[in-house]
Image 1: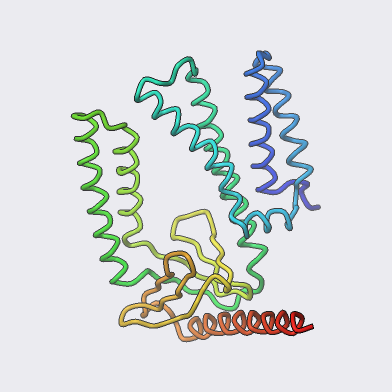
Image 2: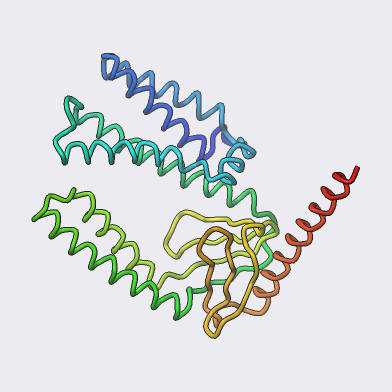
Length: 273
């Protein structure tokens, strides 16, 4: 028997339930009643949105699952900066705590929707392989890590001497750690009917990129490169990409480009009428 809820609906219910609890507390409702009401609303939302594959796929395709994370994150950042400069006024600390809670629950929602989109939009898996990004990309990441680390040191000094907000060196520190972790990152790739699906080693979130968001495939001395439109290219070490994976990548791009060309031709014939 299929469960009435899934990962995205559970996260959506938790997010809405937390919002109802926060609103109740802001209105002066007792903690116990506000929490119970929030849990009830959350369960209703979770059941109502359970297994809504089209909904989660639509959100994932438009990258709208990031909104529940971005909105409270911007609000929390604004409160932190206001507090740094002494303009926070009468805003209680509990507001910041709620915003941080929304960022955490929103991150769970983002992960669940991203995984659901990758699972349902990809289609049939044609081949799977594991690859790192190649020596050129590795050198770039090392340079970026050094740059972030230097910026972190400068920002900490500027914060101590000139009152630069502490969020700046904190951001540099986070970027340094993230970049350092990514230096030797490997990914498990899946060439699918609808696009390229991949998961970073040790990660729990699977990303999916439709073929339409790639331009061409090219091979360099050290890497197989999928050129991306409006984003960083996807690089895979040349020695890690087997021949059947290269053929699957080329076939996916050819099929998408042929489909796009046929659609444009059809539009052209319709416009002639």
